[in-house]
Amino acid sequence: MTLRQCLRVGQARLLDAGIENGDAEARWLLESVTGRAQTALLLSEEQVSDAVAKVYETLLARRIAGEPVQYLLGSWEFYGFSFAVGEGVLIPRPETELLVEFAERLLAAHPAPVILDLCAGSGCIGLSIAKLLPRARVWLLEKEQAAFAYLEENRRRLGVENAVLIQGDLFDGPAAFGLPHADLLVSNPPYIASEEVPGLQREVLREPASALDGGADGLDFYRALAKDWLPRCDAAALECGETQTDAVAALLAIHYQSVAVRRDLNGLPRVVTGTDPVGKEPICCYN
Ligand code: GLN
Image 1 (spheres, protein in one colour):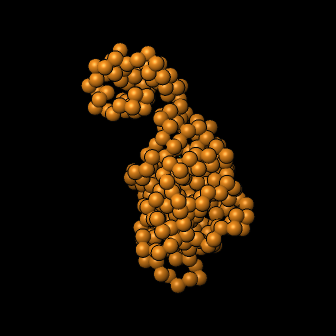
Image 2: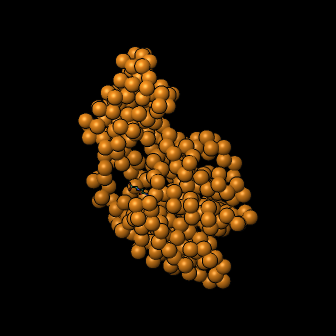
Image 3: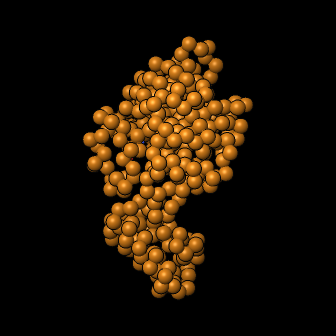
């Protein structure tokens, strides 16, 4: 078979299996096994070796069986950076970029901001911020061993030098880790209500339940953040589910004078931010 034929066959197989984005996914997978870019694949009459065809075939079969394409590719782009991903770590999602965007704007003029990223997972939020704000010091906390290994790999991969990685559980509270007072806390904690987890899309069910399950009402992590962490942070930006923004805003309002809900590219309310800590003179006019 030629490369071009391989691509057509792969695309047909994924689309027949009901994979909506099958056209692009078959191409990404073929690109990853051949190291060739899209245009070369579309035109190439070059013969594919048996070995390459076999690897491609295995990836297609795994995709059809429900593995997320991001895990098969082994990396995924977020905010223009390429993060290593695989089993055991949540795949970075575009809506989460809102948190990075907020941090970048809030702290652009700060000479040496301290930032905490809790439930850091792959590190996509905190490591992106560390890259974008070289004068910042970012502390990333992640509990799970598998995710923590990706966090370490991604710090190396991106060449980040201004980040500290800590393996630990945010429910132990900030005192357990000796973390400094922060200018900003960012987090995309697990926020799906426990009973909704089994009904998630089959690809999402391949991701770690510990990164998705936020307890009975999905809000366990936000309550812990509000109780122990927010009093030590001058601002916070938290991702949550689209139906949870009122509850999360109420928790942030305990600690911040300005609370705002921000929408993702699909117009869904996704991120709640708090600035101007209660009890301090409001200095931050950011909105
Ligand atoms: N955004 C993810 C989803 O909807 C959930 C991530 C999370 O719980 N933090 O699948």
